[in-house]
Amino acid sequence: MKKFYKTVTVDEQGGRVLLDGRPIKTPAGNPLIFASLPLAQGIADEWAAQGEKILPETMPLTRMSATQIDRVAPRRSEMEIELVAYAGSDLLCYRAGEPAALVERQAATWDPLLHWASGKLGLSLVPTSGIMPIDQSEEAMAAAARYVVGLSDVELTAFALAVPPAGSFVIGAAMIAGKLTAEEAFSVSQLDETFQIELWGEDYEAADRRAALKLEFIEIERFLKLARV
Figure 1 (cartoon, rainbow, N blue to C red):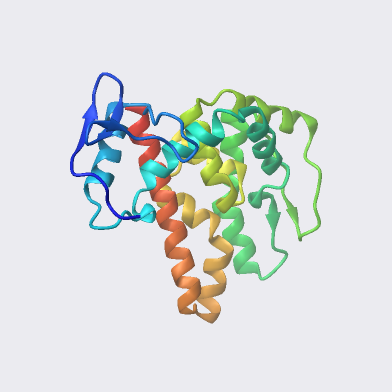
Figure 2 (tube, rainbow, N blue to C red):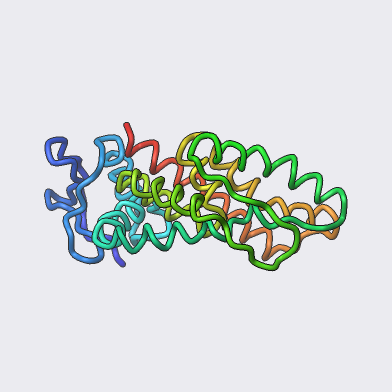
């Protein structure tokens, strides 16, 4: 889209970003009202940085705010159910049987997070070896449900953006809680891939995908921090 505005300002009273004095709307046509003034300023900076053409891929804060308003808030109950399901198939619970070096690395990296989830969230998940699915307890799934219900819309948005690429309910929760930084969450979720790269190397396309995924985690973390101020 060609740039159609000249000035970008922040309406501090309404928490809105204004383009030539007119408020931004989401793709669904909803008012883009922000969770905090710092987030509004961050989004204003994204719009102000655009050149002759508007490049949506350079505006992660705008995209995530619109996701919160258009997708999370109106269908929150459905999203909660979808996210709880990840606790039943959490990446951290599916362990390799071999080689020993990978088994040891998974245990050393993933076990502390499972212990944290059990103590902090009451979410006790049971790990297994291999790829065959196992059923987690009703108590664990109920704890996962309680956790997502307790999240604010902003937190649920960040959680919903982080959990699918991580493949892990626990990693997403640890990131929301500040137990893991964005870079740590990326590293933990990519443990298996990193191990294989160390053995066999990495092609350019895979490296680009991993770099994009890491940046996505960093942007989610930034969105959450600005919205919470």
